[in-house]
Image 1: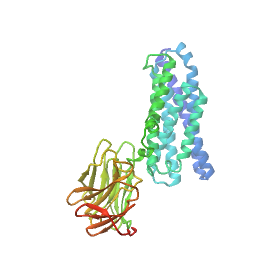
Image 2 (image 1 turned 45 degrees about the vertical axis):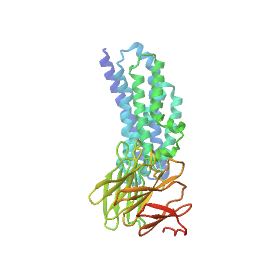
Image 3 (image 1 turned 135 degrees about the vertical axis):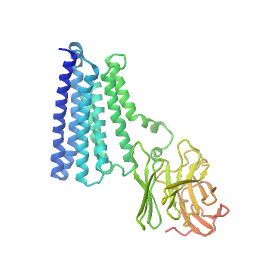
Image 4 (image 1 turned 60 degrees about the horizontal axis):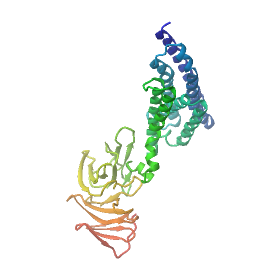
Length: 420
């Protein structure tokens, strides 16, 4: 019997087994989500991925133990074996994840069925692939420990990631982590199964393991050894900004890996809204007249912060001025970024100081397109502003009185009225 005939039968056997396992795994969410009790939902939520992960560990372990016999007695084309032992089961795992995510979103009435389906598919693929490689390289017991880690990940992220994937920046990074882990598992299985590298079985095992670990956790090594704070991980996320009366708002409409954030402007008084893509490193500062939104933007390689004016009525974006603020001057999304005068003529913005740990306070004249530093390396607290005609009072350690026409600041000799 030729190798083609042998592996045709093997592929057909693996295909039937994968379909059967997939259908059995779907029993858990069907029964659990249909009963709609808290206990049944929790059991279904944990039992479904647990079944897939145990299958991945057992399948890889059985394949690893029979490898020596097959290599000796059967003509083994590497690519068909990889398709039979990994690709078919991975497709089934992704299909189970898609059903799992869709049913879960329907049960919770979250309104994010499409996003949840993709997240669940990534989760099942990431778990299946990494567990498969670990079980192949070691044994089923280390793979079981990894399975418990993936189940803990799901339990920890359920309240946020698996209800609304775009609800927070941490969810976005979790999605990127799942994407990397899924790719790592697939590439690790290829390196082990298909002899692209010349070497012994042990060499391919170590290479597959290092590949999975490097792709999955490599980007986090910098956070461990870098002197920069871990909060820099979130410094690129756009923030939400609202007017004082809450009638105007601009916020991320969607955060999706692989594309620019979609910022959404809404005027609740006129029920007008507009959406537009902006680079990640963009912060809303405030609102001008006639639907104008002012934003600050700085790419990682740039030494200047660009102040933008977004005319939402025409969807036109214009550069107002560039501030020579230095690298990484744009503040994090959780920090106060600035404010705009009621007439939209002036913008007050804070940037990370290049002189220390404080904040540089800048004033921008949007009409003349000029800017000036009011106070360098100011301590925290300068985030309250009152506008009085051609003057402004900026609160902080010592209140500043700003001459808007001259773009100069001096220490005020009276108390600042609290901004309402």
